[in-house]
Length: 245
Length: 256
Image (cartoon, rainbow over all chains, first blue to last red; front, side, top):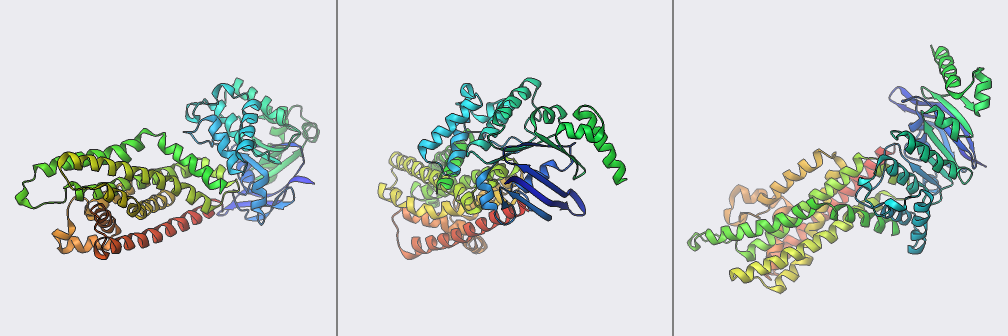
């Protein structure tokens, strides 16, 4: 079964289409990247697939459940780490994790186990009793992803997970994401070429709300005749813009 | 229920870990209790002004304290809405009613503790100043103050839902000022009479203070306590229903 499916998924704000009839299929266990410049429609696409926004047209489905008509089921099997760090600022790292686990209905023992598991997975032992508002950007982002993972989601949405992080924090985040590969389906949005290149199994290039190209790095290189993702991306973007002109 | 208690606990921690909550919800009302007691001592007996006597003042200060619970409810909701936190929570299995109850329940607990502490301090002031406030009156005022707490929490939830982080506290300040003056906390509207009394009678704040004062003085008659309490209960029910409806509508709009 496909973990994520989008058919003609569209979101319009007035007359402007932020996401324009995109078709997308992500297999179970795959790490899929939506690559595009700012304003390409990546976040809007993720919002529709995680039931945070209703599509104007088309359908999105997670593990066979419609995002439009089965939102409750979808919400039970997804985790999302939004672009802006979404943590409870006055709670400690551990309390944030315990809180999220309880929201998903775990009992006291399981809640403790899950929080401990996340603290170990993201190596947050040194900051576990620190309030979220005192954490650095990198730690906050890790906490945000750990909160998204606490309910062992089948599908994880990571919206620009390394945005604003320094090189070292970004590399550490990549390692953390790589550790998750294969354990669940991950859809991440990014505008960093090297991030999409090093982490993802397949990449979809979004230009002005449309998917201009989709495939593995090798397929994108073959399609454009360019070497490296950055070169391939530029070729795809130029082609897409000349088609639309 | 897990979801509601988890969210309620988070909200309680967010508020209790903010020093400003203690300053406004407890410190300020207690300072006003002391200042107004001193004012009462300065007023000559011949003036016949009894509004600041501890038996009258205690109920008024308890309601005054609750207006700040409204302020912190509004700030918490508006702050959550302005950031990405609530968006993340929208993607969990929580429903709009879970959010509304999760915001209201901890505030109600804080309001109860606040009423008990203000009641305790009022008793102490009563002993020192030779007032006639009784333990029974303070204890009786606790359940009587609950509906007014719900009313102010409802206001807070409504303002925090409808307005943004900057506008919501401003509007709460207007309600705090209006509630204080037209709620007969700082003067006796019944004694003043006229247009002021008519305006006060059109707003729920007057009945909050009246019921709390009557309970503190163990006046449990229909006119003194039960009728104002009924008005407060009805006003609270309407306002909470309105706030929940507004939250649900806003959540739907956010997810559109």
